[in-house]
Amino acid sequence: MRKFTIDDLSRMIDHTNLKPHATRGDMKTLCEEAIQYHFKMVAINQVQTKYCAGVLDGTDIHVGAAIGFPLGQTSIKVKVVETIDAIENGADEIDYVINLTELKEKNYEYIKDEMAQIVTICRTHNVISKVIFENAYLTKEEIIKLGEIAKEVKPDFIKTSTGFAPIGATVEDVKLMKDTVGDVVKVKAAGGIRNADTFLEMIKNGAERIGCSAGIPIINEIKQRMEMAEKEFIEI
Image (spheres, rainbow, N blue to C red):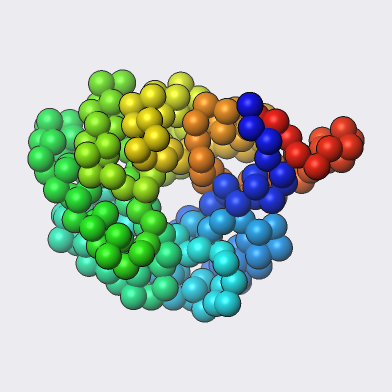
């Protein structure tokens, strides 16, 4: 078991608003909440990158742009352009969705090439890269295969879900992903994580980053538990 302070846990959260109808006011609120709770990142649609980077300028909160989102059904060239544009506009992290069609067709060289191109761009610019699997549509064998490709390419994270599929993160998938990549690549759980118990269970099973829109109530609940137990840390 490991000990975590409340700030340790806050720094594992990607504070998320990926709604297509989000306003500038919503983005400002998201960024201000991330500063207040000291979350690691704001997870946003790519087009919001420049605005959020401006709001967060001078802080240690990252701007995370979603690429090929939420379907992943654009070409490698388009995803590359999106990635470069996001970085030029202030993104510190990139979360891109794989091409599910090519995976289902077992075109693993395409999947590897796509991953390698985006990861290389991120690495060159000292930007964190995350590969979204969208596990709701995958078999266990496909999840393992993607993990094996990721072990070779070495993005910073592999990620369970966009949050837009019928099913989000599951403990079983997080554990499978972690077992596949070991310590070579980190795992991010996202989608449907709405309470403290689920949040902690994801971390217990190997997730090192959590993407969610419920970060504030989750952290407040854990903080309350710690205060009631008169502890400055929680063991997971």
